[in-house]
Image 1 (cartoon, rainbow, N blue to C red):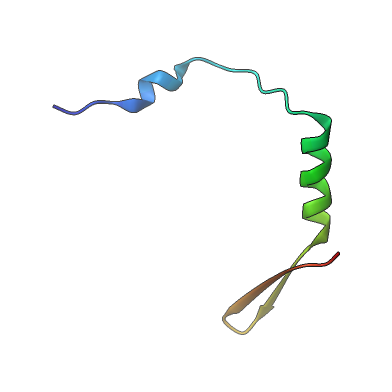
Image 2: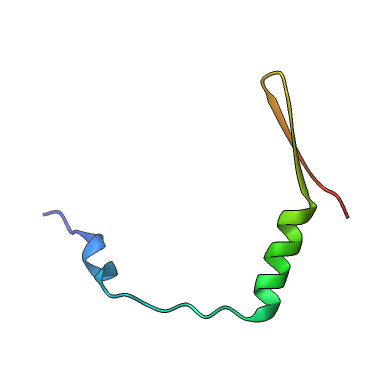
Length: 47
């Protein structure tokens, strides 16, 4: 018998990340560089 796991996600939860987490993600996204060359994709972190 199939069990539907999506039923447990009906409750809405409020996420409150720390300021350090937000700063880390923003700095990471600023440093991430994606270069497309023909059919290849290169990712690098520029620190």
